[in-house]
Image 1 (cartoon, rainbow, N blue to C red):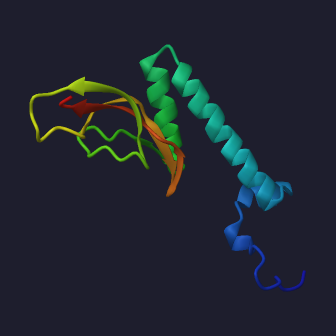
Image 2: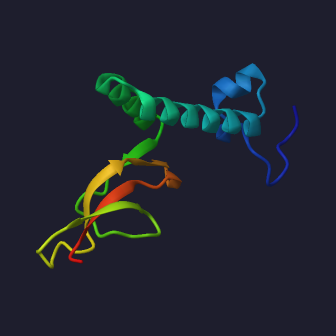
Length: 122
């Protein structure tokens, strides 16, 4: 084998299982992303809390983490407002009261924004 051309993917950047199986790095990445989406779909529809928890733990083991921003300031760039709940406490206004549907991030890439309920005084 020769040297790796500058700017190309080196063998150290490639999943060893994909490399051993002859799968191209781009295909391995596409397959990973498809499996993550399938897991999120299954988790959203799981009838058992134990099954959903197991899927979430499995995803976390590969760098895909749930986002539940309860108590954080609502940020429309990172959160999707699913509803509002009234409060008389001015300090809570604009704060996430509850996560309705968790979001997910793959390392530092947002896969799905969390759907949240936000405190409002109106």
